[in-house]
Amino acid sequence: MSTQTIRPARTLQGSLTLPGDKSISHRYAMLAGIAEGTTRLSNFSTGADPHSSLACMQALGATVVHKEDRTIEITGTAGSFRQPAAPLDCGNSGSTMRMLAGLIAPHPHTFTLIGDHSLTNRPMERIRKPLSQMGAKIDLIDGHAPVTIHGGTLHAIDFDTPIPSAQVKTAVLFAGLQADGTTSLTESIRTRDHSEHALRAFGATLTRDGEKLSIPGHQTLKAIDATVPGDISSAAFFLCAALLFPDSNLVLDGIGMNPTRASLFDVITALGGKIKVLNVEEQYGELIGTIQVNASPNGLRGMHIEGALAAQLIDELPVLAAIAPYTSDGITIRDAKELRVKESDRIALVAKNLRAMGATFTEHEDGLVIPGKQQLHGAQIDSGSDHRIAMAFSIAALRATGDTEIHGAESAAISFPEFFKHLEDLCQR
Ligand code: S3P
Image (tube, rainbow, N blue to C red; front, side, top):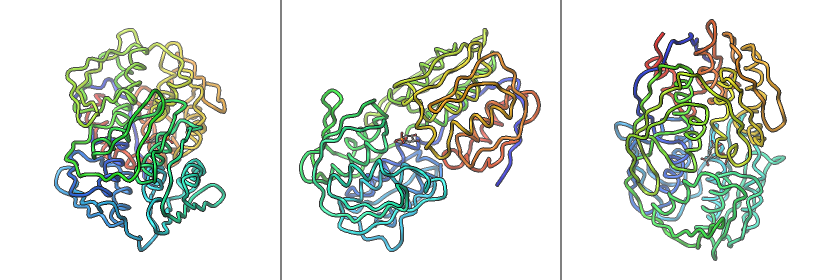
């Protein structure tokens, strides 16, 4: 385990182009693996998680070539995965395990999906339920991995998602793409729609009628040539850091601005930050732009994050909680129980680390109420080997008094290996 020391900063200045979005990289990698032809993906995520998806695609028969400069070429299996020789190792990646389950379940093989200690503790019943309704036989151990899938012909279902989860939605869409009949899915809360865009990019037909998505089965996909937009959830750490210093100036180039991910921009504005969109373009349904962010000279206000907003900001909540004590009115986070079953129990770990830095707050089963006007002090941070906890508290440390030590800092590499280097480059002390 490595420890990173974070010293307080005076301000944050500079510009950055972020590595490719983790969510989009997973989807492009998986669909490229089943498509016909060679897909070329520029600015692929450098995080370990999407590389777990790539390794699984290789084990299933796709060819993956790493080119220079974050470019990956994937030659797909044209619709037929092979029986892998060994269990498919999903590493730390819930996205890999859940979305891949849907993609492979229609294939006539037996697959075993395994993961690390954290992933083995995460709930998998949520994908077993719809996929077994479609006809797959799936074995779990007490609701958890290893996931054993006895695949074969699946039939369409009409599914209402009980929890807001883009991973579960994707598992159903990926299975529906290859099933008999037209599969429909209705979301209680609309989650990130990268799978819908990615499926269309690879040539699939998919329709939306109000909240209902429908995907006809037995479709074939064709390779694409695409650039993965910069990861807005990785950008979130620097955006929040910029908010902490009145004279900060941060420009982010090539960043993904998909509206189902961009609630963060509304939050930044609500907190008092200023965002300028300098340009925006579209590629395969995804928006990519350049933004400039400055903090308000009057400091940060506070806000309530609950309901659909909590679901849409789920990956950004740890860093928003970590900067909450520095706001004037505090930040309340509710309806975010899903945080307890992420790479760690993120509510418990945020609470533990806020407490270590001297904050007072109230912990709830589904969130945290964190008052503002609190000065944090440097502390020993337990990342729990969770990338977003390690990065979130590195940001809190920038405005603390004294140095902070982040234990398990290497976990940042799950989504953003360059994080600490960029943080050093942007911070002025
Ligand atoms: C993701 C969906 C979210 C998110 C995760 C990535 C995705 O998980 O937390 O980091 O790429 O679809 P859930 O589907 O469990 O909400």
